[in-house]
Image (cartoon, rainbow, N blue to C red; front, side, top):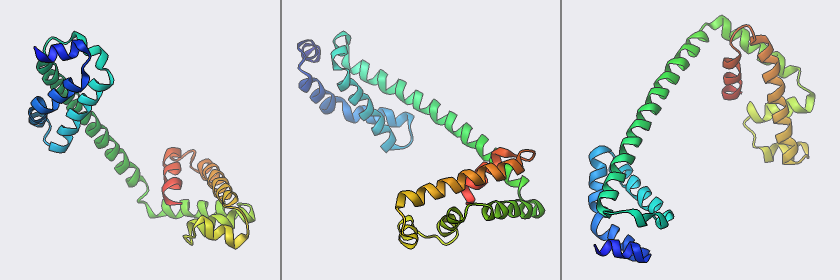
Length: 192
């Protein structure tokens, strides 16, 4: 009943002191009964308390603070579990798709042909753009090193790399249009 008085009087420090002193440990234990990871369970409880603090003016309608807290923990944990299951399902689906894509490119002839088209596209880049791109991607130089070497700004180096990637995506993408355009963008983004 004292909690209700604190809430009605807007004595938020006393309300949240009560939450921490009387309920925090029990809430964490309760959350842990749903969530195997104790740290994650504790984060859920902290998130609920933080949300309560941010919306403390809305707490005046709460009849039982204890019931409200434990119900909030249960609902948040169930939502967390549901979200985790959806994420896992998505990861599994993405993994299967990635394996399919990988299988499509295991063919050495296809890889050689794709590498040839990428090499040709790089050769067709404007000279400075190509040099900057090759130093960045093939020699592993930092943007600062490249800018010092060519006596240009770091922004100019970044612009040349961006331009090279854009041209390569377009040229190799045209080649792969009939193959797998999404895969080409993935390969260019990852490999180059």
